[in-house]
Amino acid sequence: MALFPLQANFRGDFVVMLVPVDDGDSMSIVADKVAQHAVGLRVAEKSAAKCVYYDGRELPSAMTVAQSGIAPMDWIEVAYAE
Amino acid sequence: MPKLQRRDYYDTARDMNWAFSYVSEDEVFPEELSKSFGIHGEQWWGWDEPYKLTYREYVHNQAGKDDGIYSIRSTIARSNLYDNLDAGWKSAIKAHYGAIPVPEYFASIGEARMARFGRAAAWRNMAAFGTLDECRHGQAQIYFPYCLLGKDPQFDWAHKAMHTNEWGVIAARSLFDDMFTANDAVSTAIQLTFTFETGFTNLQFLGMASDALHVGDIEFGALISSIQTDEASHSQQGEPTLKIMINNGRKAEAQKMVDQMFWRSWKLFALLTGISMDYYTPLESRTMSFKEFMQDWICRQFMDQFKDLGMNVPWYWEEHFLPELDWVHHAYHMGVWFWRPTVWWNPDAGVSAAERDWLEQKYPGWNDRFGKKWDVIGDNVRTGQIEKTYPATLPIVCNCCHIPICSPSIGKAPRITTHNGRKLNFCCEVCEWVWKSQPERYDTHLSIVDRFLAGHIQPPTLEGALQYMGITPDVAGNDAQAYAWNGASRLAAE
Image 1 (cartoon, chains in turn cyan, green):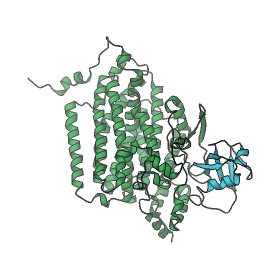
Image 2 (cartoon, rainbow over the protein chains, first blue to last red):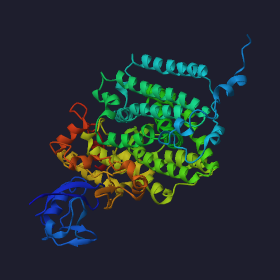
Image 3 (cartoon, rainbow over the protein chains, first blue to last red):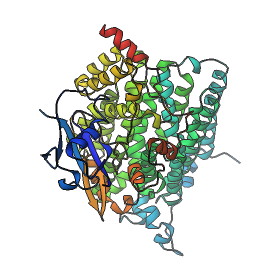
Image 4 (cartoon, chains in turn blue, green):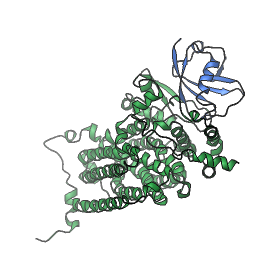
């Protein structure tokens, strides 16, 4: 378990943010950690699942940061599932 | 003894060029301070400009200008004019005063470098006046806000800002050091006096002077109008320098210097002036939108002048610059407002119902791009959830312009690249191009996020960041209108 800084934005927001996560976090936790800096603050809340996109693909919600191949300060996007 | 007419002695006094015999050209004009671009000695002696002044005339003119603005200042000091100004306008001038006065001294360093290392006597003469101009601008623009300190401690940042690590200041200092303080004489003439002053300073000072008079801020309007009269003359150093480069086969180098600094200037200008014009200036006092000013002063007047000299429109014009006119300063504004404790002025949200109508009219699609986000913010204000209108983390900033990486409405990846093992982020292709054009010049400069990750900011929290930036509770920004915009919006909705 180690602190893991990411660049992230929530789809529909206007700015890329520094979001600290843990390398043991699953993608669903990562999505929540990103969302807490945008959803309900500048992006309207929706009753829908959230997905993490990295390098052009959606990552499984149970996959951990350590398993994902994401490097520190890589960029991810989080979005509500369509 | 009969007195000589000015025309009989002027050229002799101004054009004292000579070929060196006891020392080499390189010893007099070292490349690092006076970069020749391969154009030798006497080729520079044809340098000429239209503002022909003697020192006596210069002193007479400047004394008159200073008499004018300081007497306006002392007259207005006895009135309550400042107290009656719009809160948003007060924020516009606080932002200006923090970002501009000390860099005027930086510009004085650049002018002094040209006064010594400019490669023609006429140029050195002109730059000597430019050096004095910039001292006058620095002094006046620090003195005027100093007189307002009793009314608001945020005015202290006119002097303090540039000596801090506040994030906007890092962005401004990076630009101004690149352009003014650490530049060779020839590049300074092209980048500072031609690109920045002929293009952007005109806009900043004329646009804001016009708005100042409309809002009733006679003091600020008189001050910056007076400064602009100096810029109009010493900014002329760029054009003759550019002509000599073009005439000696160095157009490509000149074009690159203009393209680089135009872009760097644009980003900071959108941050500072864009939000002041379209959000902080009271709606009833706006003469034009920021985009309309840009289209008139930059896209038409400046570019016409540029093309008349035989130069090309920058390569990024159509694909990057023109599209940003529609959105970038709106994104910067939202960021400055949301991260408002990190600036030394009180951001005016500027999104009442009437203001939103104006924004949508001037920038079709604004409601969809930005209005929806302001709806969420407004809901939080209305329901008393103010804590949701404050940030809990840092935005990522660009390693070139040092401004947060924004996008118009949908997610846009920063341009991430690695240089000598260091991961860098750029907001766009043009910032990446500027940085990579001179990596040795920019590589050691750390962004505020680099500093945070390197452990320079302790504790690593927002409070630690505010302390690092020099922001104290008495100056930390808050909503300029105490959220009144939201009430207006609510009433309109009802």
